[in-house]
Image (cartoon, rainbow, N blue to C red; front, side):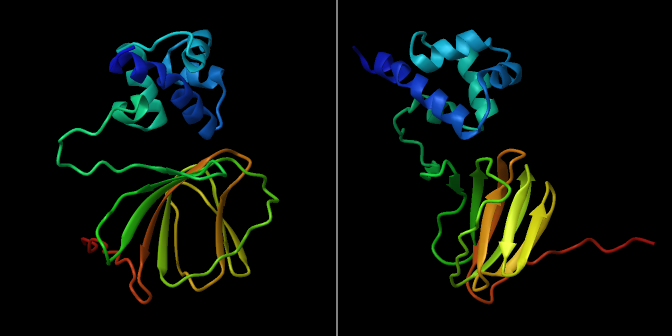
Length: 194
């Protein structure tokens, strides 16, 4: 078996992992991609090898590159290839910055969760700014239990006990900017024109 064969044979488990991480059914994925649920099932089980025409919509819908989808080896390309971190609870963290010091940016994708889930509050040095991209974010901040929807943001001192989670309505995607203690994101608004 040569390298391309091994690469294509490994796609099935990746496809299944990505679908389960997003907490969607084969039927839902079929509706999003235009690929039949039976074909998707065979692809995930490794009973069928994917074509480029199938990989492109799958990568787009799952929000990954083709290289990530097929597990391609790194190339000599000098651009930084940011790799996501998958946690044991199914959440995914994508570091968006790599420079030491200053504000660090992350994209989080958290799977759907029970609305009455008991939060595990944490504290640490720093300042956090979050912005919800998609879904509903539950933010427990000290004694406050907040629900943020797409387009809403929150900022807080991370020495305040806090916890993030999704709701039962589905997964949530949000951006997080974390800076040093006392460092805050600056928002500038355009002046009002009379």
